[in-house]
Amino acid sequence: MSSILSRSVLLIIYSGALAVGLTLIGLAVFSLLRSFTPGSQPAAKAHGRRLNRGAAYSLGLGAAVLGGVGLLALLLRAGPGTSALVALGAGLLAGLVAALILVIVPNRRLREETGLAIAADGREARVVIPIPARGLGEVTFHDGTETVHLGARSATGRRIATDSRVRIERVAQRVAIVRPLDGNGSAD
Image (cartoon, rainbow, N blue to C red; front, side, top):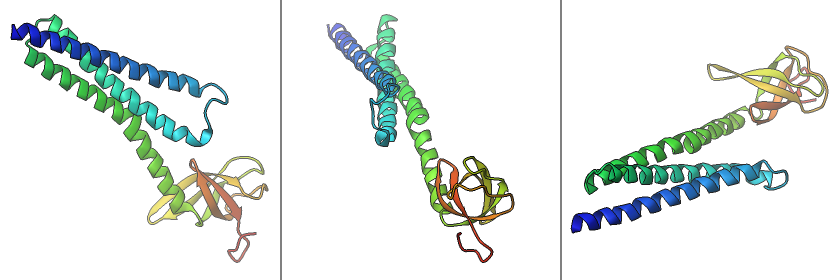
């Protein structure tokens, strides 16, 4: 009798986990589709929403895998303990892999870009690819023993020639906004 009762309880738990997981995945996908609709979300909160979508999708995938594997294990007549361990292990593994891919790695890259922006602000650099008046060129600067290459745009709106010295005002998405330096090292 207790075996039938425990299978029934596990059936309800696995079905609930599957339903919750599919709901979270659906909400994350719906949020992603809404982000392609013009004017639906303010741009300032885009990073937070991407993080929330990734976390919701990861949790949903973990719960859905837990529920699906658990139901499959019960269907294959595995014991209640075995089905619970296999379902829990598969759900945790799927959720953690999804979180690693969708949440942890993108946030690490964002932190690295923020660190680069802080390290580059105010530095002198040398133009290696000429910067057109309204276009993109390239600058380099030395950070210790490492040479850093960044895309660059002119802050003044004027063309900057190769081998010119410039000062980096700010960096956004690996593109430096630079101002030419005159002969004594001060900005024009």
